Image 1 (spheres, rainbow, N blue to C red):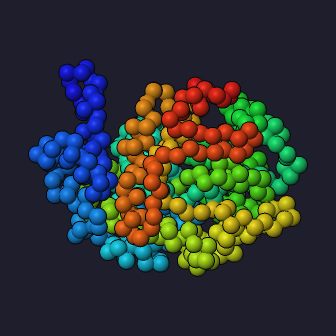
Image 2 (cartoon, helix red, strand yellow; image 1 turned 45 degrees about the vertical axis):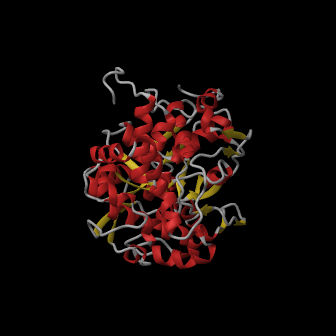
Image 3 (cartoon, rainbow, N blue to C red; image 1 turned 90 degrees about the vertical axis):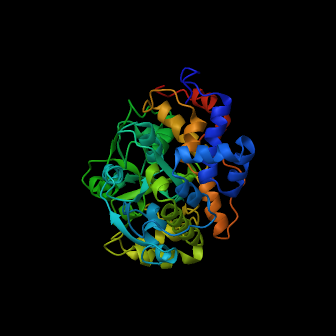
Length: 427
């Protein structure tokens, strides 16, 4: 950043910074744009100032070169959101891309975060808000992270205890004790959205606390919780154990919303660019395989064992196929109850950042688009999809539609106006 501008970037400096970023993470088109902008000599110098030249060249290749490291540990929480990361081990996707990966089970999101920050895992399953929060130093020490792929879209639900079968709306939930997996989770932000749209203040009218997903059903049974907005299989497991019912699927709040993701410390991507790219290719490959409904029962069997999800295959099939009992006497058929789409739209990150701001987690002002671009590596995912023979989205950002209550369209270019439109907010 230029000292001559008092800590403010000039337009040219920001253009160079973006071009360097895209040249490293964005493939051939980014390299051409960068060279056109600053010239070949300046391009080489700029890249060398950010990364060792050999690493920059490796990251810019369309396919991974020789791997710097083949034996990796990747952390995960035992939930269906992690399906691509988990299934890639028993179903051979990591090996297909030249890697020997051990997936490492963690019991909570704080544990996942700490294992990753401390370097005990090379890459990790994370809730999609987590790499944004950690990069900004919100709720933890500040460590730069990148998130080149979403793992799952949809796939969450509000589950209520069986005693609350008479609940008709959020207004009936005043005084409830809710669980969410983590403060920096889509679950927390979507639950708050549902409550606030129903006129219920999530900070005054209910209690919301973090509960590790594997403990949610037990807390519901023990009457420690009235409900939770949580990941599967624990919504379906509550029905399976006859202690709760599925009140609302998350797809009925924001269809196609992101939830979990593949993330890594930025220095892993920088120091081991070929390994990073190979890992991304393996996970995107698995994600696209999981997208096919015809593979869901096979996947359920692969991820059910004790060292992975440790769940009945029948429960996982109900989640992954979308044919399931809801605990209210109905058998529902919702094929997109959960889906798998790896593309990390910048607009998804911008919405998450507005909710961090809305509910007081993010105190400082940030440039939403800049943070989204630095953390959600849409260009890297686009290149991986192309390399694997898939057609990626053309745009890095899109408008998103929320269908619960009054339909709202989120325009990432008018994020502040969107944030100001809500009557219930902290900020």
